[in-house]
Length: 182
Image (cartoon, rainbow, N blue to C red; front, side, top):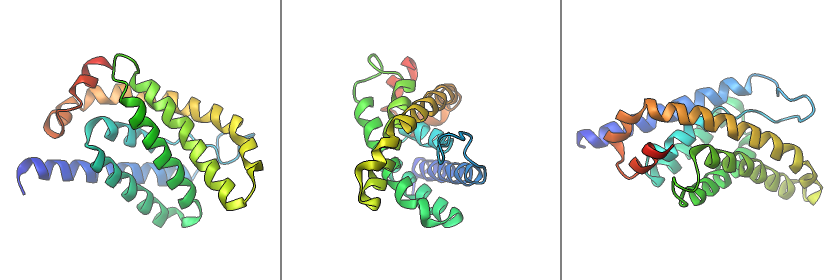
């Protein structure tokens, strides 16, 4: 294993640990939105957003799987299916929108898409588990909070991405165009 591979593995491990700890800590607090039970800010998604811009796709998927499994081990598997559905649909949507390039969509825009589709994925899983489309009536509320959270996560991600430019240069050169436009 060369030094660059070791740096990449350590970086993935640090991001995974950060996302897991943030997810666990956030699960300890009740929903900040009394009229939208279960809605959270999703601060761990900030780590996934940073990974999206600093790692290869395969590494982001590894990070996502590890984050989901480790968080479920510490918080319980009751929300695992919802987190998995929301997380992977969100990640897919963010990747697709990111393909538009930095001239057409900002990191904040990508985060907004991620926040929205995270909730869509969770509601689709709930619809499947409950065997009723009535669950989708919750979408307007969750969409609003998903967009709100996506905005704040995007703003934070935009700031953090500049602070980790040196790490990005070591890990993945293909994202340099985003670093100059976000």
